Image (cartoon, rainbow, N blue to C red; front, side):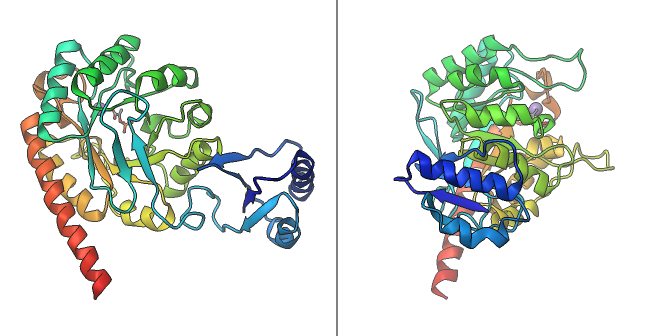
Length: 356
Ligand code: PEP
Ligand code: MN
C-alpha cells in the first residue's frame, strides 16, 4: 500500500498516522516516508493494511491511499502509469541526456570495461562520441572474480573520468561497490552503476538511495536474480529517497558455456508491464562475445529497451578486462546508426497503432 501525505499535514497529524500504522502492522520501528517529485509518500507491504484502508484514508495527514498488490510498490506500474524519465548529467558541466519516458530516443552508453590509463580512456571517449554515443562508461572500481585480476585504478580512475567528461562533454557512468564510497563516486559520476554481484547488497542500495545528490542509479540484474528480486532491489533505492533508478538486463547465469550468460530479452516487455522505470540492455556482458553484440543490440531496441550499454576499446585484444566482448568505436558507429533507424521505425509503428 502507498499512502501519500498531505503537504499541509501538521506534525501531530503525521505522528498520529505513524502511530496508527505501527499499531496495524505491529512494527516497533518508525515508518519512513520518502519524497518523490516533491510529494511525500510512504510505502508498506503488510497483509493487515487492506482491511484498514478506509480508516487510513480518513486520517487527516493522508491525501490518498493506493492499494498495490505486489511486494514492490513505488517502482510498480500500478503506482505510476507513465514511464519515468531520468535526466543524466545536469549536476556537472556536460551535455544532459534524458533516459526513458515517452519520447526520448534510445540512449547509447559506451566505453571500456575498465579505465586503464589516461590515453586509453581519452581515445575511447573520443571514439565513442564520434560514433554517436551519449554517455561514457568506464570502471574505476572493478568487481573481479579473481583477486589476482586487475581491480581498477580506484580514485585515480574517477579523476580520469571526470577530466574526460570535461574534455568531451559526455556524462559518465561508473560502478560503486561499497556504501562508504557512494558519496565520493557521486561527486565525480553522473550515474552510479550497481553491478550484478551487488544487486542485493542492501547497505549499498540504501546508501545509493540516501546520498544527498540523488545521482541516477543503474541497477544491473543479479547473476541469477528473478524479476521480483530485481524490482525489490530497485524498490530499496527508491524507498530510501532516490527515484532516479534505471534497470539493466545483462544476462543471467545458465548451463551453456558457449556464451557468458543468457540474455533474457523477454524481461524487457515484461518489465514494461510491471514497472515505470527505464530499461537498459547490456549485450556485452550478456553474451561475452563481440561478434554477437550488434545483433543483440538490434534485438534489444526492437524489444523496447530505452538504451544500450556497450563495452568499447580502441584495441579490444589488448584490453585489461573483458576484451573478448569489447567492440571498436567503428563497430559502435554502425550500432548507433541502427538504433536511430530502428527507433524511427518503432515510433512510426506506435503512431500507426494509435490511429488504427
Ligand atoms: C561491468 O559493467 O563492467 C560489470 C562488471 O558488469 P556486471 O555487473 O553486469 O557483471
Ligand atoms: Mn566488463
